[in-house]
Image (cartoon, rainbow, N blue to C red; front, side):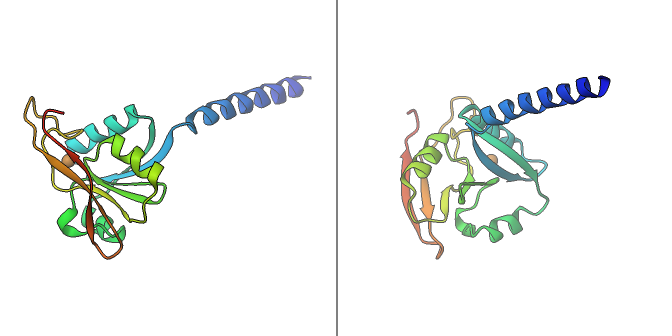
Length: 153
Ligand SMILES: [Cu+2]
C-alpha cells in the first residue's frame, strides 16, 4: 500500500511537471551565447525574456569562434550571438524585429544590429540614443536593410 501511494504521488508529480513544460513551450526557445563579462548582453537577455522568449544562456570565452561558426560577417558582429528557429540574431536586435523575422521567414542566415547602438534594447544609456539599422545577412555575407530605428522612436 505504501508503495502504491508512492507511485501515485510520483505520477501526480510527473503530470504536474508536464503542465509546467507545456506552459513554457508557449515561449519561443532561443539560445544565447555571450562572454562571461558582458553586462549589456544580460540586459538584452532580460529584454527578450520579457518579450516571451525562453533563453538558454551559454557563456563562452571565445565569441569570435561562435560568430565564425554561425556565419556572422565580422563587419556585422556585436557582443552576443543568439539562435532562434535556425536564424542567427547578432547583437542588440529588438524583440519586435525577431518576431518579424520569425513571421516573414526570409531566406537569410540571420539579422544583426552591428556594433553597440546606443538606445537599442540592453544599451539604454540614460536618454542617449543613436539611429541604427538592423540588417539581414545571407550565407555569402551580403547585408540588406531589415529595419530602421530612429532615435526617439
Ligand atoms: Cu552589447
